[in-house]
Amino acid sequence: MSNFDWHIKTIDWYIIKKYLGTFIFTMAVFTVVIVIFDISEKLDDFLKHNAPLSKIVFEYYAGFIPFYLNFLSPLINFIAVIFFTAKMADQTEIVPILSGGVSFTRFLYPYFISSFIIFIVTLVFNIFIIPETNQLKINFENTYIDPKSDNSKQETHMQLDKNTYVYVQNFDNNLKTGYKFYLEKFNGDVLKSRLIADQIAWDSVKHQWKIRNYSIRTVNGLKEKMASGTEKDTILDMRPQDFEVYDNIYTAMNMHELNTHIEKEKIRGTGVMVNLLLEKYKRFVYPLSTFVLTLMGVALSSKKVRGGVGLSLGAGIFLSFTYILFIQFSTMFSLKGGLPPLIAVFIPNVAFGILSIYLTRKAPK
Image (cartoon, rainbow, N blue to C red; front, top):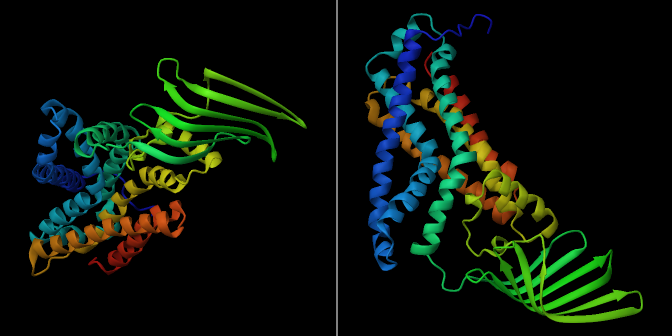
């Protein structure tokens, strides 16, 4: 390792430019294809719900394109690596490099420089940009593509802190109002007070809740006290977003919101902890696929074969979709089968990493 030449040479720049140029070109092609297919699929929804053109372009597709390019980036990266590497092999550009005394490890050096650039960009997008663009996309979808006529969450139990529990029979997120509201406070296992109200409504100006038609029962040992009223303001550690009925809200949370929801979920136990942890870990772990699939792509396509570029590209596309399918399976096992979220997000990279190392050892040197 001490003899490894870390200097970027002319041939390294050649490979880096080929890699990044092919990656950007492939991403542009995928952008055009997925937008055309999506327009053909969603056009009826756009017309049915009278979606304004400005919102379609600057909200929906401003969120749609980054989301799907990010989701498909492993496939795009893999195809790009295989395409230009197989083309180099087909044009007998790799054999002279390896025959000139360059080790296969050193040959991989410019690939991993390029991979590192893509990794950093993907990581930054995952953490800072994709959640914001997802918010645009999700708001548009929930308004113009799949609006819910009944946006009420039923039978919600929630623990706000160690001693405070709430129950809402149903919550209408359009009106930001809950019906049949219960608030109970305990000291250990002993009930200290119970509030029952017909309604609880969110005041978006004061950022607090209004409780209407309520009664409060306070327990102090053997003594009890009752009080009632028509309306009162109160501050509770919950927001209307906690009653969202849409399944796609976690992808639109920034890291601060995600971490805050995770901490609250540890107390509340509403059953969404796995979803939250999966979303958090994905943002950090999945960009690592850039290194794994780059290594596999070079190992598969660095040898000149009779089928030419097409054979290597076909194998690359098959393995790319297998990788994405692997992600979906591991996610489902975590959501439905009890697999820890951190293990679930690492499984695809570990499995394909082992395969990549095996293929690299078998690759021509």
